[in-house]
Image (tube, rainbow, N blue to C red; front, side):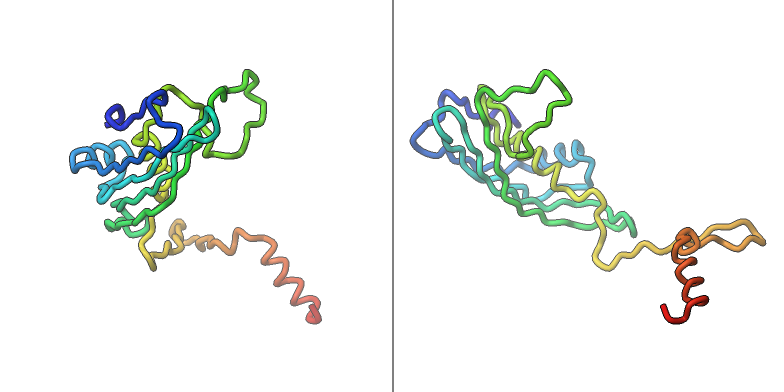
Length: 178
């Protein structure tokens, strides 16, 4: 999927935008869902443009839309999540990784080193993988309190693990003014 959507930087026009519209077919969606370890993927579309930014750099601006099918982490029931996000990448020529791994990098996640090709499909897959909910939860699904104990032993509850709550209650008993 990736090489057919790649644009050679040397072929990109400096004076106008290069548009793209990626809508993978059902087979590609199924493969992507497996790679992203989700139940399913529908209505994936990535549309945008690549424009020159200065003399040697390039900017990709796009819209990502997808419907992701996953299981709720609480109920384990199937659910769908709609993703609609703007995606932007700035490909900078001459950007290299520092020799010292301790050097602090620029915080702008949009900036990437410029290669000989810009591939919107790669950007689409990366953005999608970052936007998929890690712990999808159906609306209204609550995780109850699990209480375990051996027979004859009083179970320990969550509030029992908060020692300062007990101290505050004791303080109130000793000093009713507070």
